[in-house]
Length: 385
Image 1 (cartoon, rainbow, N blue to C red):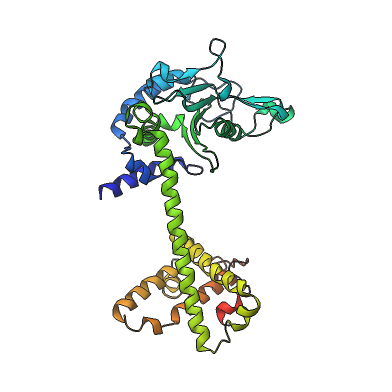
Image 2: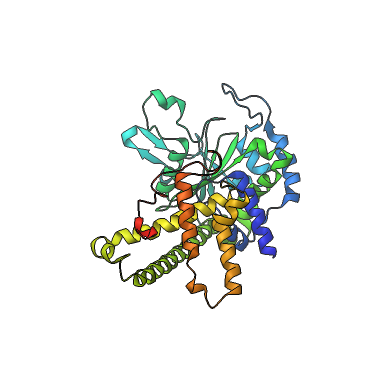
């Protein structure tokens, strides 16, 4: 029960931030004993509001008023890093060659603004790139739109830097937003963006607490290695792989169950349903079964999101969720005869026709969707034709 509550809390702040790709997953956060400390967020918010800049960003029209002018002060006062936890590169401290990526074809070199040393070895834990205040992290720098250079977005360039230096964790910062980026080699990237403006508001305390949970001093340097950020990020990928494998197995089981049902139906009509298709175009059978599963997933999601009609007529005669509940009741009442009942399939076929052609007393009740997914003529054998 405790884990369920913590998972819900993690899903809450993740829902507010809307991550792109996979960065962290609730099960991995639970395993790492990562907790969103809302009580501490009150103190952190006080510190944050003391260092934010209220002056408008020069040459930028933005609704966001608050921004961070001094990234170093932010890491020390809000994230509680020590001064030597962040190495700045400039005239007095040359950038190590292994931390830069030379793009010869574009006449450009990718390099970080800072790097965070790994406390456990002589390498680097993460790279930090600070760009112009308010610069669009998902856009191309204005100077490149008409000039020469690699016309990739700020995010794309930073991801390439992380991959080619083999340092998968990074922070991208533009004063108004702090973005945690995870780009391991050979895998898809993901990122979480924390808006500075939102974290200064009472409603944004959970976001600020989540930032502290992931990038605070404890998570990066103090807790045992198995609970630190790198392990947390890699564990999140492993949990996602486990979920993907389970889903794949469930889809395969569903396919076999559908195929078994069609084989029984085919035997009941002496092979008139599948014999010719199996001989001439066996992949057509597979396509029909996969399409059936895709239709069900689409419809279940649409019903869950309230996109389908909510009246009694739809619920009693067409709804997939309603059909499932009715079958559960029937199974408890007639457990010995469920394999002799075939009405559920006709129910689903009627729903597919309804979605494809549309229906209802008005056009707005359920507009015709058309398209290949619900086209009844795409796989006519599903209707016994």
